[in-house]
Image 1 (tube, rainbow, N blue to C red):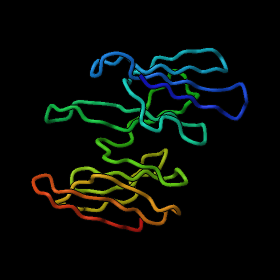
Image 2 (cartoon, rainbow, N blue to C red):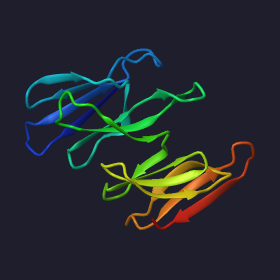
Image 3 (tube, one colour):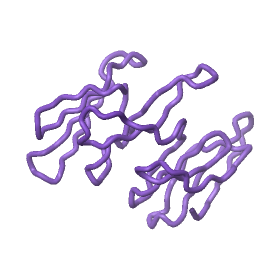
Image 4 (cartoon, rainbow, N blue to C red):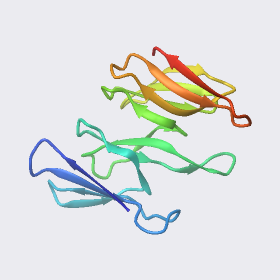
Length: 168
């Protein structure tokens, strides 16, 4: 079970997000509590993204699992306005390996099979994409000033690794 809390600008205004209660693989839907109106919202997601709330108190980030074309469970980063009770979340990126936000929260970097990409946040517009084939992204990190992006790539059938540094 995971409980995440988010205090907002007003001292008596906060959000609680409860996810992962029960048997793994069969989690119930995420619950979101809004203190300003005592509403508990059940969202059609079983897990939140590791960073569930944006630092500006505007966005809720969710893990929109889905079954891919090969029949395997995959992950998708989905986003919704935090205060938009009852609204649908929209998918920003499918299978975003190692997804991380830039220091100013305006971009998201992530990998997919053979690529490293950045998208704008919260729009989800593709900004850059680099081929790193035959490597797949293992992890991604931004420099402190957001000027550089580093990724570690690995080869699925080999033991090779590589470091990629780009200037988005």
